[in-house]
Length: 231
Image (spheres, rainbow, N blue to C red):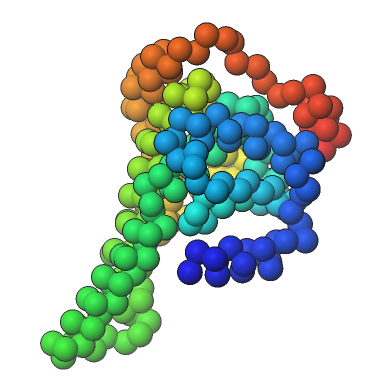
């Protein structure tokens, strides 16, 4: 299933994936490398791809296949902001959320079959909407919140500034606003996300302080700054 998902993404976006030598791709890989090293999953065959598309988005497929859209680059602004995004995606892999969602789908199917056995036969539309709003969406938000917490710790342990995660989500909120109420979304609202990260910040800062970050972090490389100015 993981291979099938990867092939489908490559079929859809393959022509828009930037080459490995592109400054954006090198920037993403450079940022990710430090996070992977502290994740305990450096033996996984990670792949980091950058898709030349304006959506401010990123996602991870099972097996450590991470895709970042160029549309999110102006929002991340700097290496710490990118670390917040990548830490979140790497956290999904660490927590095996994709596998959990697959197992969860099987549970929902079993529940639907049980309803049928007891003579409860809701229409297809009602059945799907009920499962979606009552069960599936809250489960997805739970995974997102867990990935936020783990990702914040990962970026801090990798000696990135965890406070930039809050700043990045504030920029995301300003760029896109809230398009749907939280109860209708598979993700926490930007406001709730920011509040959660602020609550977790003392722990993340302590993690960073204990990580022997002996050198001051630098921002973009000169080459990336040059390309950024042209973008």
